[in-house]
Amino acid sequence: MEYITNSRGMKLFTCRWLPQNTPPKALIFLCHGYAVECSITMRETGIRLAKAGYAVYGMDYEGHGKSSGLQGYIPNFDDLVGDCSTYFMSVCEKHENKKKLRFLLGESMGEQWLFFYIGRSQPIGMELF
Image (cartoon, rainbow, N blue to C red):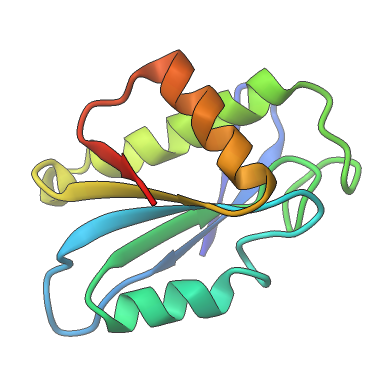
């Protein structure tokens, strides 16, 4: 778990759960709902998927969970999409992840984020579920 800083100077909390003693089958990116977070609400999902052999990554959006910002307030949804896109792509660009399959898992508002992300970025090699 670590913090990253977005282009607006906000600290965003990131989470990751990795399989033990084996390379991951694929990468899964969690997109949480409104007024919840990856660090707590989606933690069990991350743990279960890691035990099944997947590398799982998530981020508490601005104003959510352990990230900076007024709790529950999203000043600009496009910024949220950009923050997640930047983080997810930084994970994908790591040498060990370049050839891994990639999946996006959204719940509640996280599903809406996925549609904005897909429409805006047209990411190659990402599957929704």
